[in-house]
Length: 142
Image 1 (spheres, rainbow, N blue to C red):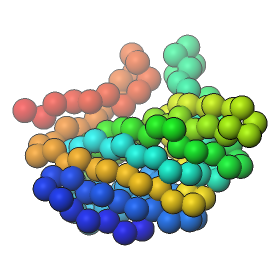
Image 2: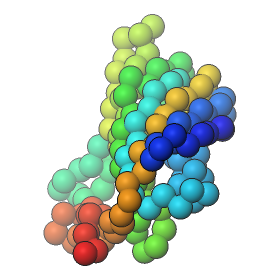
Image 3: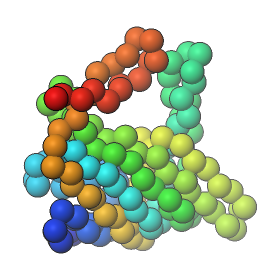
């Protein structure tokens, strides 16, 4: 992974074998980013995508392996209990098989390259688990 800062944005290139969320978290820690947004594209050879089951309060996650383009990847950056918290969704496509899959990204391994932009926001938003919803919800600190 390599990245550069331009204003409040970080342009990140991820390389083969690198995991998307781990790379984003590394940049956030090094650059002390506590609030922001993320978008990107590229190619993955493996991805875990989940859809939240609102009745059972859990993600139903599927693993996809093969040649997939990242058609869209977007999310936000916040904190929970003082640690970086990433909430990222992705859509991946395999045109040879006619497949398109999307959902909450819990793992994405770059197969060729990944090109991402992290937009840092001056501020802080924390998260707290909601028993009512079953998710870690944004909580404004001030």
